[in-house]
Image (cartoon, rainbow, N blue to C red):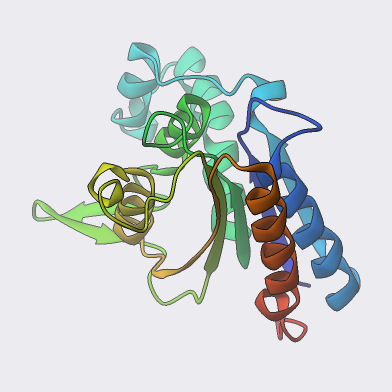
Length: 208
């Protein structure tokens, strides 16, 4: 059974470009993969938790030494990472806010970069635990300017950050679909082009 994980992080609702694109991708994925398992999170609505001191202490305490409170916290913190590990395709709705990802998406990433589940250390060297699992990520992003060109290219901290952190846990197949600019006509045109790309991005049913 094909498994899709979809994450939305836009503070906008009905006017969000990234939400429109993630919704279209999920709908097409369902059509192409009968019986697919779809897990979706709206990080704004869910108020995804930020990393806490107690959470950090829990993650780095050996299982046989955790208190009951730590064990409960560990299970709660594990949910997002476990979903990522189980997914074949991950879709991120990631608008650019002030040159990078929304704060709630950063909070989510801090929960999925999970020691023992998505990465580990071997003699001090990091090990990407999701390497070789053929996972792919589609990132739908929107920004008020064109950050693929000078003079703003150097100010794009969203794409390099996501590629780096996903690569750290072993996911290198990452595709960005961008809608860039303020002009309403241009945004509409690029949104339509992005929607047209979804058919190609979904492709054939997954063989799982």
